[in-house]
Length: 131
Image (cartoon, rainbow, N blue to C red):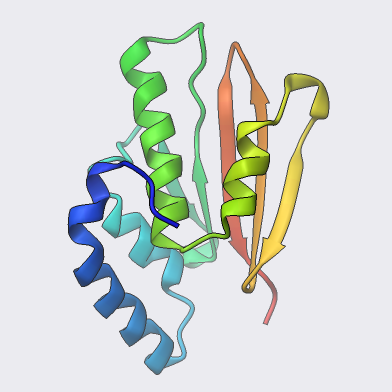
């Protein structure tokens, strides 16, 4: 899945990094995605948790500055792109309403969770499924 983000120019290094991850058998795909999206994931928007087994992107909504809203959206799109998440996950995220509560999807050994509210924006987390 490709999204119109600045991270597209760093695709080749990420592919190499993810290939090394796959060959080494480690669970560092999320730290690699975090590093790949470093420009989009500012200290305000994205955090690694649980020794690199989960990654969250904080949402910013209409109550926040426009620049923060854009940083949050760019971070989420970059992470989804870096993980080659199925387009169905993005499609479901785009149509989530505040009344829907927390949503989730599972694909390729990862669990994607998100919620949306106009005031606080889209809060997003991806976790590696248990070994």
